[in-house]
Image (cartoon, rainbow, N blue to C red; front, side, top):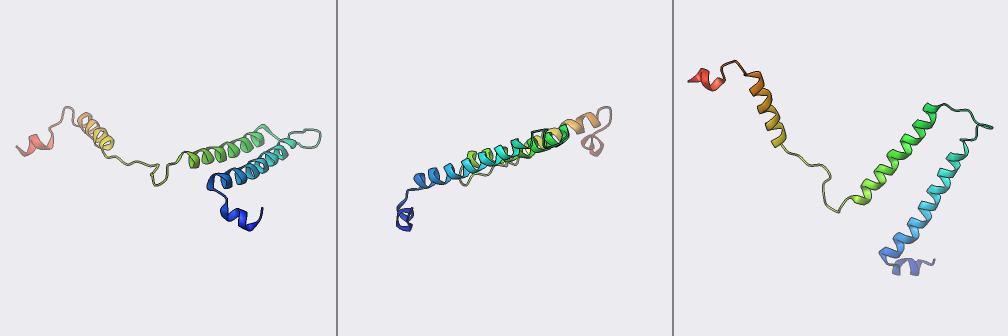
Length: 106
């Protein structure tokens, strides 16, 4: 692909071209990892296998997260309402059978 064609290439076509290359490269690397499952040439424990699978699953989860994000949207949300409700329920159970500060002040 020439430099002129790349400049004129749409974002969608650019995505498709690069995605195809990168996904095929990733699949090729995963197949290389699968090759070490051959016990004729390699020795490993179940813990080793689980560690490999866990790190690959974590990477896939990160990938999914990045594709599911909407631009300019925070993924984390903050709310005090749950903490206030939790504290009120803790305080009410803590103060059961005891005078509350309001009753003492009155």
